[in-house]
Image (cartoon, rainbow, N blue to C red; front, side):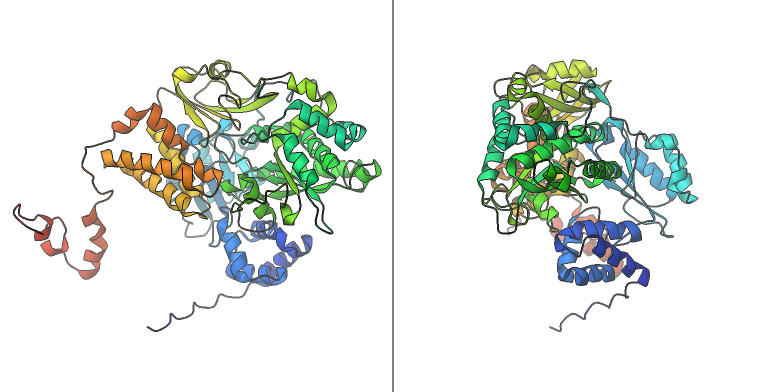
Length: 624
């Protein structure tokens, strides 16, 4: 065999593109761990990432082109092929679909005369889908150029949007009402109490007064558990990080996980919009306790619209002496916070994948041990906590652990924020003390004729009406914060199918059970939806569900089939309606698959068709 010819050489990067690359490298001091941020900033200037640009970045960082291409190819928001100057991404979360996002997206494509996922011939516009943009309470939502967010899309806005794009009207001249982003807090508790101002430094001063041991004692007394979903003891995590050895020249690290990628979840977004100072205070209190010198907020790429305000607030804190040298002058560590913006990868919500991304790598989960508290960011002891956890810390440091422990239940202290969306009159953020029943939340949000609630997002649990008196808390129904309501108009098979498409799309691809298993689940669900399903298909779905729960590399893969498991158990008739019989049938038309070959060969005789070929219909007495 002759070796394949080498690919044609790519044209050199333009001088303007190289200048953009140099500026990004200079801003980040050519540090390889800043690769994701460098890629993001370069793409924001030139719309996509051509190979010569990636080569220039690789040269500037002293790494290989293959590495830079591998990292850029991992994240959904990085484009290795051209996209339109107007790149429009519809939120494809189940709750947005329920509001008609799919029909609106196809109508927009019709008006712009292009197909979803394609670029218009003049390069002006491209239209696609993002798994979830984080605004299900104000959907259907649309991202414009990965920056601006348009909420409450409808048919009239689609027509107007198509006209604006065709005329290349600058974004600043689009209707301001389109970009209205409501915090949408429907029920307040101690974390969202309007009577308690989001005062910069209040918890920092309290933490410095208590000292490291005093803060840790109050956190332990509060019995606070992580609010990101896993529910690990916050005090235990901090103790382990304090006990871990720090490498020479290193420090301990505090990371706020704001990669709120679980579909249906938006409570952290509300906290960042209204309680940012409490988030920073909670992180700084953690730094005082741990003796940490470095902090990060990992902000999901879909929340780019929040970045400028958060950066401005951090600058104000530095000027006020609440970070960096000013904090050290008060007796604390010289702790500072940087914001790292994600680039569209659900798996980066898993803490070790998040750390890989912070280090400029592909966001694939690490093998543990070692755990992040022992060896996290750049091998330094690292504490990763959720946005809501740090807000709780800010209040606990001020009011004391006993105050927090008196809220909630014995196993689940304090309050919890719930992102309520779907079929209800009042979607938004609700704060309840742990122990509230599902039914009480449904009554508060004005839900009627509810047939199911997805608690904790698709990786959580789906509950039927006979379970609505169960209580939200670690001892009964744990939750990361999503609370999606489905009334009796909804087909729960379609809901589970939508979630299966999400997990297949978002698998990081590291382990075979998740990479292949989620795709097999999606294909089986699509087969049932197309009317080609049979009993063996539902049996295989059950087998795949069991396999993924026990064989995947990380916890996200293990929960990828939770919607399938729960809907098969609680809403099986929705599947049975799609079963056509007991005999297995193919998922596609084999003869139709040969159509391109027939066209290429110019044949259309009986021997060119499987259904007409004699061997396709053997005699009953035929012996193989």
